Each structure stands twice: as structure tokens, then as C-alpha cells.
Length: 240
Image 1 (tube, rainbow, N blue to C red):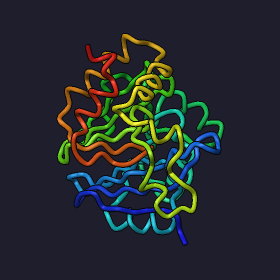
Image 2 (cartoon, rainbow, N blue to C red):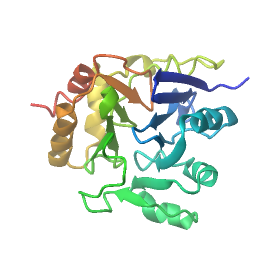
Image 3 (tube, rainbow, N blue to C red):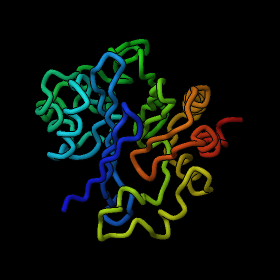
Image 4 (cartoon, rainbow, N blue to C red):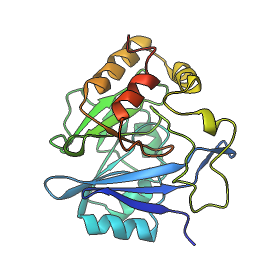
């Protein structure tokens, strides 16, 4: 039986959740997100394998035009998505440009490498904020119509209950049970990935200014409502 959990959050958003153990033992969970844009095209944050059931769900949403890696770590499945959707634009971050080139994969755009005002084509529906001060060069995305924030390693909401719901392994352990936006552990984790406090503060405040209620993290359960308060809590040391 497949361990992937596919769920339609809104008429235009589907998520693809599965188990993933960070460092082989921490139950982090993994998630891809597909969004149908107002023009009918599909934007995908591709962070999990393109299984047959994942592909059939995405194909039913429309034509995939954008395949996105949200930071320098969530790139392992870009090649298989690009192979399945060769006409789609591949968007990543600066640290991936040479790494993907070495693998024979060319990015069509990269946050942190392109000019800051570069538009990739989905901005009518989805805003982006690049965090160059984050160790993983993360990008936060806002799906404006649904007031949904989509991100990778900027905010965790563990334990990853949904992502492990079809797994024989447990989503619960000492660390996972304490890593959520309202915990001291989360604030400590954020402090550890800051390369540049000035730009991290600037970008954390930019995201705080956005109009969102839901958060779809790559790691942990979806925050269905109250996402703004979760963000403010996680970044309380910077949002002062």
C-alpha cells in the first residue's frame, strides 16, 4: 500500500504528504503542494517523489507550468518532475544553479541569482519572499486567493501526523513532539539557521505583512487557521 496521503485542501490546492525521516531517525515528514492558478495553469512545489497517484492528481488539475524548489535542500525530485513535464519552468534558488547543471538540469529561474524584481509568470496568484539570510536560502510563497502560506524550512509544525498516517513508523518522538511554532525549541532552531540577522528580520516582517491564515509546511501538519499567529510566534525574536 502506498504511504502517500493526497488531500484537496481547497478547490485549487492539493497536497501530497508522506513519511520522511531527517538524518534517518527524526520523523520530519515530507510534502509537495500543487496549486491551480487563475489562468488554469498548475504550480507545483515539488518536494516528494512523483508517484503514479501524485501525477494523476496533478494532471487532473491542469497543465503544469511551474516546478518549484523552495530552498537549497528540497531539490531531490526536480529531475523526475521535469522529465514528466518538460515544458514547465523549473524555478529554484541560487545554490542549486550549479548543482543542478552538474546533473544535466538547467533552472529557468533562481531566487538569489536573478534580479530581485524578476517575475516568473505566476505572480498574479502567488507572491514570493526570498530569505537570503537563511542557511538554506529559503523562499516563502503566498497563494493570495486562498490566503495560504507555503514554505519548506522556515516553519515546522511537528509532529507530522498526517504525513505518517499511512506509515508503520511513528510521527512522535522527543524532538518532534516539541517542534512547533509556539515552542522554545522552534525559536532556537531558527536562531541556528540565521546567516544574516538583518535580512532575516526584514524578510520575516515582509511575510508577517502578508494576508494569510493557512500555512502549508513541508514538514508537519497543515495549520488550517491561525497561521499568522503561528508565524508571529515562531519569529517573535525578530519581529520586535
